Length: 168
Image 1 (cartoon, rainbow, N blue to C red):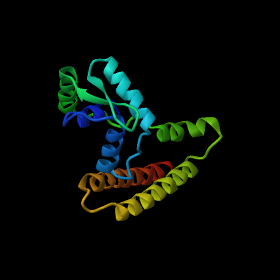
Image 2 (image 1 turned 45 degrees about the vertical axis):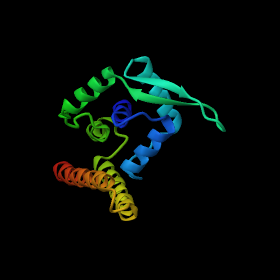
Image 3 (image 1 turned 60 degrees about the horizontal axis):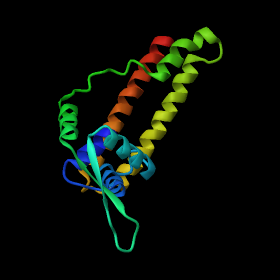
């Protein structure tokens, strides 16, 4: 959550609730939305680490609000983030650990685990399809997020099929 908040602040100052709304609008319903409390805690940590600065702004008919802006250190952290690649494969997979250890425990059947996981992935795909249909076609970022999740799920389903072939 830290770096996405920095990225939103790169375009200009904002308060916590505004940042939450921006994330929701940008990413749509498919992305798990943080609660506003989580955002304010993260903003506090970013401020303590010198990546942002906050300024109290008086409001006439409401409590004061704190508006945050990016510092040069925050801008540099953001540049570093954009330059990093995400190259770590998913080798630390919780499901695979269950699958690998099931025969040693005698508590679970590998094929039953595969079938259970397959049902979960298919349900998730159905839910994502519903979200895609409900999401505005104008929000290309949300559509791409949903499409990427569905492609990953399809790859996971293909991998489950491969596991089942090997283990039967």
